[in-house]
Length: 255
Length: 255
Image 1: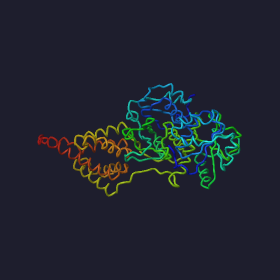
Image 2: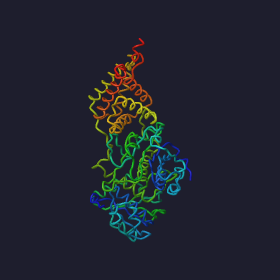
Image 3: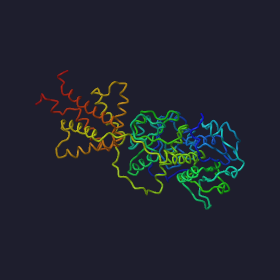
Image 4: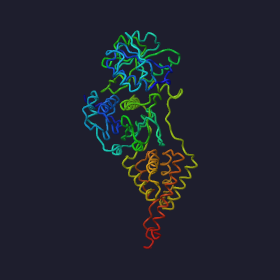
């Protein structure tokens, strides 16, 4: 079975360190149910391709066939604008927390604007670690009963897909928000590295054991801002202006 | 694991002629995720109780333990008021067709009125037959991509439960997106003035006729970030650290 019907743009599904091929296959199936097509796998534990994934996909072969493998979460999101992370529990990060419904609306705004967007899902038991979540612009949580809160991987993808498809339902009748284009994550990453390099030089990210949390909190600020390309360039200029001396002041002896 | 939290009334889930114990267990798990408790089985093919069902329930034992078995669909719905039937395709019956969302609202109206209500789900491959559907007051269909329309049994129960739980969610209203509290605008203003003061000193906001636009664009970045108090303090620290770094770089002779 092949599909041309779902060539319309949709968010990418990014599975970080998935364990069982069966679960990847069930994710592929859930994606196909709701018109999601592009599956990205970060370090799948049992390797890729996977016969078990294909069997569990129950015919959603195009999702399995076109899945791509990445060596890190950062690489898997490098070309994406809006990136959302699914987590079971709230994290101690000041990122916006969206319902699946409001997440679908945000994703649709970006996809309609011609950008690539994605949703991160963690490994079966452990979920996403904080470094993965830190790469995302916002968090999606699903409301579940407190006495049995945990959704499995394919279920989380299914609910995300369901809300996505519902948001798309009715062929584009929803009024669109006008939003400036997001910078690609790779450019945002270079901005972060520039800032953190100067802050290291300034001794600001100190002591070392607190550095990861400080870095994550700073990155969260700029991720929340949903930076455009122009804004990334402006901030690079601000960092240079604040931390570097202009040539003529640096070389008073020349004057 | 036992549960007292979900003793509140909820629709019954009725599986007609389910085949595999695993699937019944996955249904139990999906029910527990969303506070559905009472599972009714009409002629389960592989008998009941089922070790495979218990294993697949992943800890939702109370649903499995309390499941009851019926000899016919008519018996399984005999004590219920509102009964809804899930079907993959429209039937040639003049019954109302509801989305999962509107179905959840109808079910809630009845359950809130003290009535018992239920949702019928068919066998894994064949679904409900027309005689089963005929027992229902209305039909639930789930929107799915036409090229891969079929949901499996546990997925259908999951989506029904999700909509049920959402309808019940958050004391009357729909679940709201959670957003961190914003810093007061006066504190954000002081942050801006700090940043702009340093950038003026660096000659960055130049030439003067462009200064207002540059300032506005920079402020936009941080306003988009919806800063918290803590983040305002962090950014003040960043500005100080970078400015001090520059001063140290300006005095190589001191070293």
